[in-house]
Image 1 (cartoon, one colour):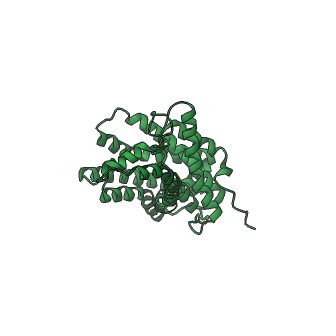
Image 2: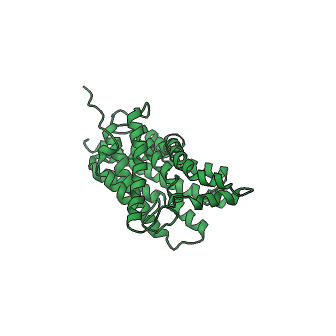
Image 3: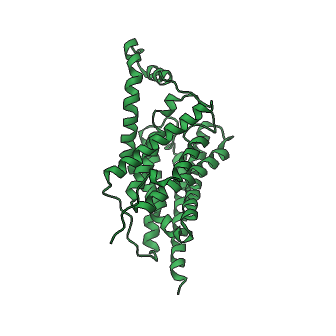
Length: 303
């Protein structure tokens, strides 16, 4: 009798993981075969395909929850409303993490800032019908330095957070609570390991598009470690606040910074150390995970 709750949760875990991995493998390769998935210069339909793939964890969680009811009756994590102070904290922390990681990379001589943003402005001119006027080119960096971070934070708080909610609903909303009997740290790391492995079809597709598979396994390793570190950050936010919406905002904020000004400002990259999947960023994220109070405050105890 005592093993029944564990058995029910084990079935749910196995079903969730089975559906998640089956769907991401099958749908990724179907979309590739149909030419509906691209990463280098995707059109609107190919962007939509990427967004739909990010919703697989939520779909798998809903299916597993319906087919195998949970042995626990704990209330679901909150999605809304979100405290403004808490939301601002998880949206500004990624900005600080990326800034610190590129500062470290610069001090180590692995990259350097391009304050005039010449590379970005050259890209703009390349798709423009005429070159930028000298006065516009002189003013553009200052305007970009103000607007780009604001846009990145805004996208992180809206579009990217909405996309991240599907991921968080599955990994932190469904899987994490069912692994918590193993202990918080093992549960967070196991969720991150599964999450990182889940991205393999997408990483494979990216290398296939580049026509170069030489770095696939090393990229997959960094992706797994990054997901395990992110799982520590996001899982701790979930544990401290019981607010899944806040986790989605945090992940959206990180995605917003990954698409932000950083790789335009620091165009020289030194793989595997710099960049959005670089070891330095992973290390700074890990350091921030060791100080969970930077990301979130504990929710007050209910009477």
